[in-house]
Structure formats: structure tokens, C-alpha cells
Amino acid sequence: MTDNIQDLLSSKLAAAIANPLFPEVDSQLRSGKHIGQEYLDNYSFLADFQHELDSFYRRYNVELIRAPEGFFYLRPKATTLIARSVLTELEMLVGKVLCYLYLSPERLAQQGIFTVQEVYDELLNLADEAKLLKAINLRASGSDLDKQKLAEKVRAAISRLRRLGMIHTVGEQHSGKFTISESVFRFGAEVRSGDDPLEAQLRLIRDGEAATPQSLQAEKASLKDAMEQSMLEVENEQDFEDEQNEGME
Image (cartoon, rainbow, N blue to C red):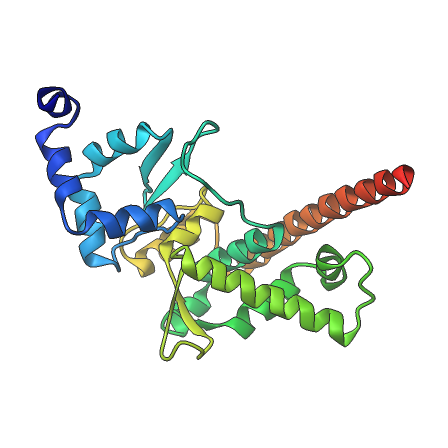
């Protein structure tokens, strides 16, 4: 039996599993966390054993992905044996806003530090507030209480994305300040950056994708249209569910 196990496990995979870092890294990946270069030890471990660990996780019908930006994450297949959770519509919208902020000139001007309030303000700037409120509560009237609930949902979304390794807290835990990780490119996979953030920003300017006043306005308009369409789809789904529920009563 020992021989059979050795046949299944290469010496390098056995070394990876025996590594003291494996339990922590494995737990993080299974929870949906993205591991970038800021997690030096865990990142180096994954880089050293990427091929072997990818083969290991494929037995669970998931893939160990190394994105062009360098971060690692698990991508489940439809038949995955590892439990997964799905982001809500608002969490995905917040993720897109984080990706937008990562690409914006403000990131360089502010040394990469943003606040929860800035994300909330940018979300309202990019998407229609009334539709955002309706996505939270179909009967929202735009009251102060409705806006308070939306702000709470945005904070909760940011906390969720923090647990997934998308952002990193700056200062004390409740400071509301954070830096944005390259893993937010999961929400904008068509835009890729180089190793140097400034060079990446210049490349985006050259390619006409972002970073000039004109291109930023065009990108903002495009993102706003996409968000409005997403909100409309959510409204239609909720209206359909309400009609079904009324028909059953």
C-alpha cells in the first residue's frame, strides 16, 4: 500500500504537503482567498510547488490559477468537491469599483491608500443611487434609513473582499483605510498590468484603456452603463419573483 501511495504522490508533492505552510495556505485557498506577493512566505511556497499543487487540487475538480498579475487562487469547476460561495451583485459591483480605483491616477496620488467612504462615493458616482437602493430593498423610497442600509451593505461587501485578499487594511483595524491588491483584476480580467504600477498606468494610457481624463470619462460611462444594466436585471428578477409569489397566494 505504501508503494501505491508513493506512485500517486511525487516526491515534490509529498514535500509540499509535508511543508509547515501547507495547512495554512490550503485553508486560505479553499476559503476563496487570493494570495499575492504581499504574502511573501505563502506566495513563495505556491510559486515553488505550483505544478504539483495544481495536480493535487484537480482531484477536487478545482484548478490552482496563477493570474498574469502573479496572484494565486482556486478556480472551481461545475463539479467541484470543495464548497464555494458566490459573491452578491453588490459585492461584485464594489469589486469593479475597486478595480477602477486601482487603475485611476488617484491611486498614485494617494500612495495607493483609499477609504471606505471613497469607495461608497465612487459607487454612487458610477451607478444610479435609486437603482442601488432598489437592489438592496425593492420597496426602498430613498429615505435616510435606506441610504444607511446601503452604506452598511457596502461596508460589508468591502469586509468580504478583504477576507478574499482583495484589499489590505492600513493602520488600525477600524481605520477605514486600505490599499487595493492586484487581485481585484478578477473583476476586470481584460485589463492587465505589468510588474511596475506606474509603467502599467502608462501602458494603459498608451493603449487608450484608462488614465487620461478623456479615457477615464469613457471608461466611467461604460462602467456606469454596465452597472445600470446589472441593476435592471436584478430588478427584473425581483419583479418576476414577486409576481410568482403573488400568483401562488
